[in-house]
Length: 502
Image 1: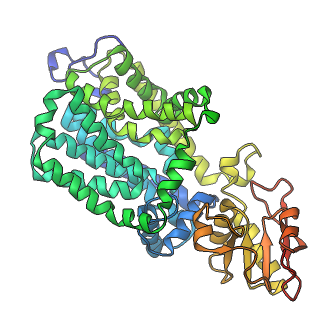
Image 2 (image 1 turned 120 degrees about the horizontal axis):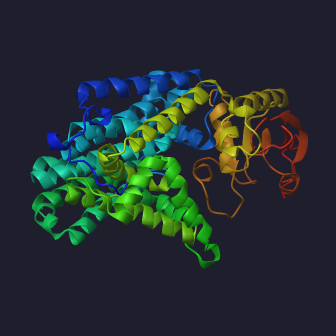
Image 3 (image 1 turned 135 degrees about the vertical axis):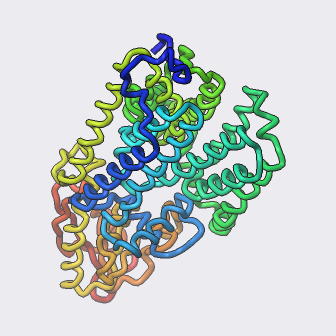
């Protein structure tokens, strides 16, 4: 992509009959994005997939309103609470807002790209973002990233608005979007930091960014995240502790050069090889459009995130989705370069490859049963087997006259508690006596071994742990879960008088 690009502002330099140069307009873009969202919604409601344990955990949070939860800010739980009141509590309903949010994000980025680079870039930015492999996958899962990316994109639009015409309106938009984004995921804080960094690298931006309106934006952002900060303070800063220790967790003992390179390489799959390749080209080989200062600004608002997460990978771990916030700005500059390239190959390759992958994911979601995935496919297998296991456990509990079920481990607790949400039987989680909570269930629904034993069933425990608690095996149930090698799991209980305490 290092060949000269085309200046689309000059009709004399534009080749004839290039599909990517056509200005289809906002109406056509709305139609395309609506079609994508509707097809993805249909796939969700056809899908045999069940909620994964993280999604189940978010649903369980949504059953009680709060300003914070153990591992995440509250917006995902609030969102699920709202949509399930309208739609229901099934897996498709829990996920139903995500395809709409992703396409709304695509529209915001299209409007921003149109403002920066013209109508053609705007249209194709919206399309390319919607069919990015990472976005296509995320459209079928309830996670924090779609909400974060939507508010990030609104805040990015506000930043450009402030640079074009400084004033109260873009400042308020930034403050509201950034504040809500922080309530989705703390990674939202990267954007104000990147804007400040951009003013260091590009001094001409300072006069438009460092103004009184920017203080207003920061104040609004802080007001919106303040309830969550207060919640954290009242709960021992649980979310911050989890983020610092479990997610960041820097340690020389965890130093691993391979993880950082794996993260960076995986971004070709997240963004698509052409879009990420264009971002690499813009950074390394300095490919530019007719608006080089805009290109540089967008690179400053994207690449530092990928660099930081790569370093995080070297020092500890880095999940492939942690670089998601690089792509609102990144996809705009990449699309601008791709459609201006003299070779049509890159444009058509991205459209065909990412479009085909999106269609394959759509069909797979609609018709493939995750229970049929090979054992190595843990990410798929964890979205199957919960309902059957819960039904078997419910039948066993009814026969035993159980009053409660205690489950070992966050993942198993989340999946079972969600699948048994209408059973009327409390599902608790085991918190060893003397230990502090390491997940939200241990904080909200603990059972420590000294609590009531009569009528208590233990599930997900190994034989030694059950024995230490004074329990004995009552039987086994069918449990076709990703974590069960045999497809069965034992159920433990106590003697009629509650058993001897260990």
